[in-house]
Length: 395
Image 1 (spheres, rainbow, N blue to C red):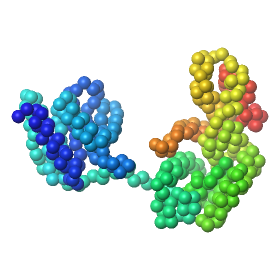
Image 2: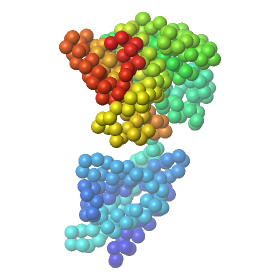
Image 3: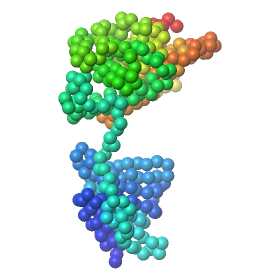
Image 4: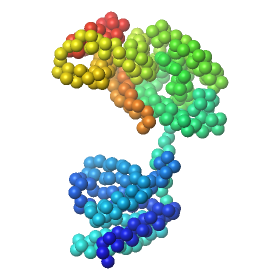
């Protein structure tokens, strides 16, 4: 029988099983094709946005790559791989396994063996994730239009709910670095509609069992009024929202200061408040970086990256990195262990940068002098007259 006939029989069996609950997976191995470092191909059925597809996991020597294909396209690809590349293919079903193999002598065999498994795998594309904030019938989630009254997350709020949980996961890891009982008061600067503020209060009180006071600081009066109403309905007795600016808020007794997406120098105002309060943990996600960009544009210093910064988009990115880099140095100067990292809370959510400061030991005079010199050199290199946070702290 020609090779193509064996392949046709294998594909016919595959198509038949895909339409039933008996399909488990496909494995292609013994690769002899031209793609470097490819070892194996595993294929399973997935449901993505209510559409049935086949997920191909390409296993290379040092990495795995996953691609999803519509059923028809996937079967065509499998045929192509069997004709050129893989010398063995196994169709796993719940009642038998079908093996197509090209032997060393060039002979093709197609045989059936006893099923390796009798359990049908889930076709869910996303594994159910253990979340710190559960989508149950919590009053604040319903009031903020995240869930219905039964605790089911609304379809148009799925991204926001994942984003909230991702923030809480990050904060949870950071809080756990601190000695027990450290976090007695939290200030969320620029709290907006309070999604994160409510979720953090819920986590601190319901999960960690802390008696922490949480304050949301927001300039818009209507948002403050709404959030205080929701806090009351949720019986969150130690959660309060106040109207005002980050600059004006008195944060002297704050242990954890958060400012997510505070625009331009408002992020500096928040870091300044945290440093002056001697907060154990400062977490900011900067937004806009206009002050430093204006400084760079105004002075137009020639340096090794001028060939990049002549383009607006690259200048913007450079300004972002320089702004946040100096912020991290200033935090270090005041005794904070700094972290700057990018995070993506969801596939549908833009990338963000978090600047984190964890209070540590005071630095030596020599180390502080080194940091100041580094800040000075960085400003000179990019033509920066001043950094707003540096001016606030008078260093």
